[in-house]
Image (cartoon, rainbow, N blue to C red; front, side, top):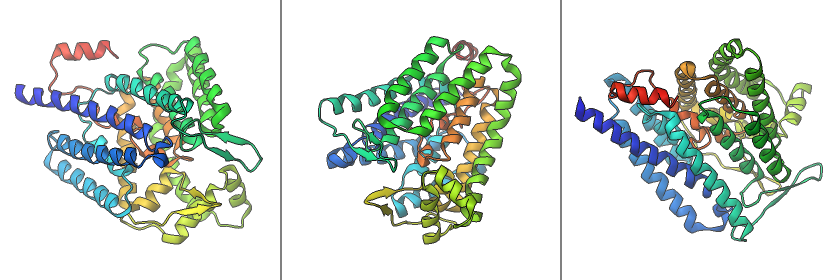
Length: 385
């Protein structure tokens, strides 16, 4: 028992190191213009990912799952690895590995370190842009408005990364978020919004901070209960809504035109890929689509998972999100609120499948009374929130 306790504690440290390493490199390379400027950085990132995959799989092997659970999880990892082999997309495999290896992890402790790493990586990109190392890219909207990247490879990447920093700050707060913090987050977010013009992330930031103000000003107990119930419902709702729009809203109809306009022509892109390859059981290789020399991706996590990764991995993704929703029922309201907003982001961004964007994946293995912890450990954990 004592030996197993020491082993699990050691694995927790290794998992934490793996998570923050993954966050740092995933921000610094694929989200920045290093992705197109430096083949050396891209190759280093590929090596880091492969190394972390091996490390996470080893951690998973020693996480003391029941035999049937272990076999089912191993099957999911196998399908995820097959998907990575077929389409070179690692996001679903990394999500599965980080989720299954997260048993006995204390999320808030890890998130504190990840928050610092996230700020360092964000700041490094802005600094390197200022020094002329990373180039700026400009994207012209249909209305003639110019968007700047500040060293990121796309304005939306800067916007969503800043949003995740705000989300993590809210997650690690033990006490109420005060008005100074709220105004600071709003001010910083608006400052960068003027460059990125990432509307979805800016709107969600406003809604998130307004939700916190409302909960804290009024009797938040009833609102907290509603938010916690909404988490599980939203996993269903976002998935059903996304696939229903893809499968049943027909091109040429008024509804199709309205949704397509609201989603900045994303529905056209979803339909292109769906009509090209359909939805299969297993992951499939998809030839990417370019529109006006610009890469057109499936910016919806639920549609991306179904079309790109297949129905089996879509169900795995769905179940992982449902388990997270269940595990955080005992957590403070801010955890449930953050998860709710990540699910909302999934409607317009497939990036939430990546663990460095969807940091809630580490809550998959959370246990209310973790084994291998003595009373002093538990008291310390409770003091930290």
